[in-house]
Image (cartoon, rainbow over all chains, first blue to last red):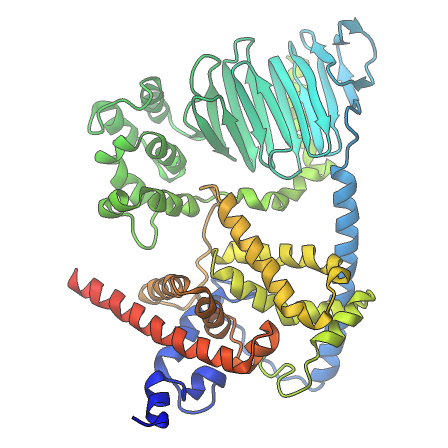
Length: 368
Length: 184
């Protein structure tokens, strides 16, 4: 075998693969066509526009480059300084009270409160409400009959403890910077807006309006996406997230399974009722159940979730047995929610104009 | 994109020097030339939507630190090492909740083509790093061999070897996959 033959067998003379010269390698060309949608800047789901010839392509390209460069530079500088300013917070610096109504006390003293200091406790009486800036990363509104303590505040970490009552948080910051403790659990913001209601024993519920929230009480860690709520229990594990629009039959069956900590017959009545009432928006509930109670996959819940969240390759029982985490991850990837890593895409939460829901909630609480 | 800078003296060093002075045009050209390379490397580790995000993060991290780069000509290797670290961090941080995977295939593609695209991508991701990255840049980002060499800092010979050996392995992997599906 001479060198030329060896080169050809190795495919080293494939000039199409090297620089698209020479005869077209059909497999390479097919792969190029299949994969071009994955390239940077390619908008998926949209056909590529036809190329339009220009009378002055060089000039247009130069202008476009200059404009793009200028915009890029301004965006980088502006966003960077705004971002850093927003996240910086001196350790222990009090939180500013920006509005209040009714009987609001800080550390037991009735006063026109202006700030909540570290370790300070803010209390609201019946029909009283208060609103604070959560350091520089968002706003927190406190409903009537609440007790809130500022536990920790510094750049990168802000924690309050809701001893009882209700709290509406609207945060725009990287995941984990803001958290709320309740009796027996911790609620961690992952870049979002949420309403937390809890009694002194830590029983209550969490409703997520945008982004994701994590609930962790050492018994169960639950990730709660926007448009869903979850029950929390001071003495027990958190419940399973359920869609705001979940129907009564679904909720009842879910509660029964949660009450048994998933120890129900995978083919049994509770599962059958749950699946019969399930709709596409309930996929998050089924997925969390299968993640935490994998024995339920022995029943029809597996097929129902595979139907609600189609993946490629398709989820099969064989794949589940061989690589359960792989199947779960593909299902998670198929959920129709924003990504936690993309917390910054919730940037409207940083705008005062988006505080309408919180203001409406405060008004309803103050009037109640 | 094809043809940018190919056959001309390596412009990277001058571009980096200009970018260090805050020249917005140079920063823009640096981004335009190297973003596809960074994206292609990231795509070897994470799905497209994450690679899109991480590409921005890599440049947001790297561009303000251009002055820390001792040798401007080493920019390709430097930015790619940042990209690989970002990809590994992303994989380590991975929590199973990252949302919908955008089906990044042309709207006109058939169901079979979409599946084939996913299989091909999975097969490329299963290759050794050198082959994986080179094939991503060639088949996904659309760079030619000489462009890959210019923008990764690798020699043209290394890129050629990586392309051809990688493609040979990819053909085998795809053929095995087809045979497996037929057998089932």
